[in-house]
Length: 251
Image (tube, rainbow, N blue to C red):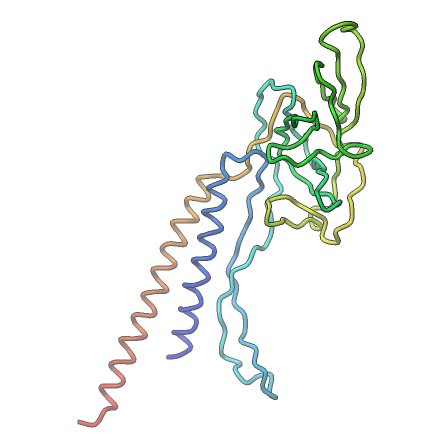
């Protein structure tokens, strides 16, 4: 009886965690460059600290965990905005983090700070060849396919094109990437990824989220049914326990 209760109880608890992950994906359906996170349930044998490692060989509980990230590219949306860029195919934009390290994102909706620094919407500077890219005032900006940032003066010699930097584009192994609490990706070892020359961007586009809302809604409904089944199993176990107690109790 206790095996049924334990399995159903842990299954119901961990199903709620997986529902939260699906809800998080649904909440980011419209987030630029977002990559869906896949969660799964698995059975884990109970480990004990007793001398015998097989003290509870028949006991197992359900565990929920993030198994992998879906790195498939999302659909590209044309905006015509000069500071919008989308990675074509595989690759990432490198960001200069406050701790001196780098983080990587597919969200290419960029902007300029009050000091002219090219940064994300959340205020994180884009990593350039030699650090942050600073754009002078009163210029028109153009971003090339290789990430080169050029400017043309809006007054004076308007036919003069000046290259002020190049956005660092990287393409580390997907299995070497981990998602942080801030939604940005970093290498598992914490090392800086090298520049990827083949990686290119499309200016005037942004990459939409790769979350499929229909699939996520179906998963949410399935998890709700699964939770109801596990709660019903707990109810049945309680009913069986009461019936057994009545049979064994003296009359």
